[in-house]
Image 1 (cartoon, rainbow, N blue to C red):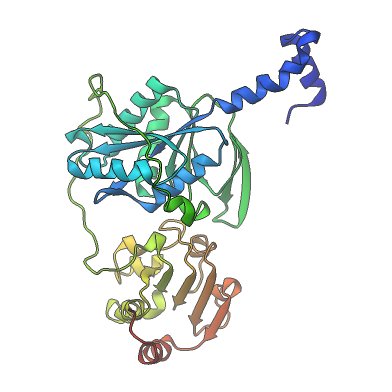
Image 2 (cartoon, rainbow, N blue to C red):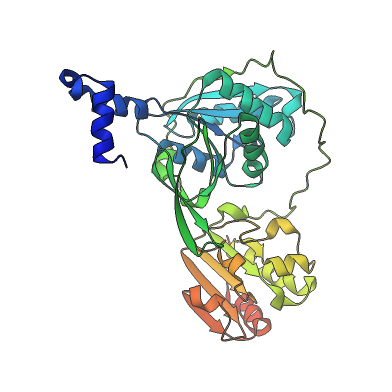
Length: 362
């Protein structure tokens, strides 16, 4: 906030008394000139849900802010993703497409250079990405190239340069104000910026699609890392980060063989499968199923935890869940402090009973 005395002095120094009524316009016009670049991840010809949430977050920076969505890749799937992006949210002003074999795989080095190139040409006031592996990989490197400091894991936007983010593993919320040079770069937690069904279904107005001129794109950092392979789950389960129901298993399951009970229960409920860090470290499941501060942040309508003690890092990743159900044989487990429903019992008896009584998911 500007102190009243400082405000008066500033008014006298930049405007004559006869023009004092123009001062509010001076400040408000600066706010209206905000423009935002959203770094979007795409797969299979469409941008993912987390990137759409980043677009929704960009829309809350300013009512009149122009929003550009940046896509990079190669081939027909990129053009399909651009068409999808152009109509996925009414706030989008334009879609920028960087079509090159360099971006076939989303490596941080070429992507960061691309962000630097687009920013230098267009002078955006903000650059936003979702706080997933894609955004966390690219945005800090791009911020270093642009010599600015990023704001990470934003859960609320108070003003165009004032944000709320969690600290101490989510046990406290901190309000921070960005005072550096443009652009203000931030990653947002997609679970904190849900996309309304009205926005998601709005396809009446398509935004223009523009190709990024890559003739001056440098290759200084190309080749410092290389793409090896990508692995994905073969089972047709909902995406963990965006699932309506999540069933999570912890160290209490004792083995990878026992963890299959969680997978069977998830299949019955049409749910995504999650795991604690302890279960991942023990080798029960791959680390892409890890839920928590160092894993994926989830906000399902129903979160079911079996054999999960409730470590502070895990709780940081499930706080936004609508309903939390916990099953643990330890009545003093920390998970019960945040659970809406808790059952003290042996999961090896409870899960088979649930599997027996629950109908198959349609």
